[in-house]
Length: 327
Image: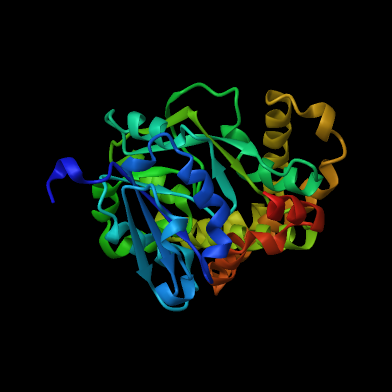
């Protein structure tokens, strides 16, 4: 096949079970103005388990199903998808994140510039619950409009697009870099590559809205972050000890940051002060997880964290679930 016939962007979706879990996202992808330039790349246990009908995906440039057997690690699945992608740009999508119709076109256009990665503007897709806002503030408020387009030092994890050849250059290290995507982006920046924010490309993200799931998710995310921060920073035992002692200060620093973001995006009337109690507990859980990562490493945190990221329908309230299923 000649290069002119290749897709311009591969869009990756992962399911631990069947097509049912990613159907809503695929519907949004089928509404893309550039859908005929997209390769849809689905990672699933098997094609048989996926239960995919041809009519479900008609309209894309091409389709690939990557069969991995039991999917326990989102990072391994994303690395496998990258290896199989045929487009020069790989965009990562989620079962709980829905792109606007011109999302793909905006990303493809932005990748014409000399950048390694392009990230979209984020919106809260389930803003009815305060717990959803807690998770959104902890993860995505920074990329909520108004934000200027252009070069930046970080992009939304799990929802960013990358030049495939740069990802492939990391070889066997790629799954580990995907585990906490911020370290992948830091590594690209350190190598002189540019990260671009493209607010014209917009997505709506469904956030965890059950409190118990929020606190567990925050703990696991913190543990992974702490463990990989030690690994990639090549920390000495002394530095690890200092950060363990200072861990109780982390929620205070992040709370200030969240407060500034609430005011910047104009949500203070909706969120303040009602969101603060749950936010404080979630930030504390993340800090405890971070401390555990510094002290004991990741444990089985990556596998447990992947469950939360790949089965979002189970981590939202009944009201949010009804809205999701109705959509």
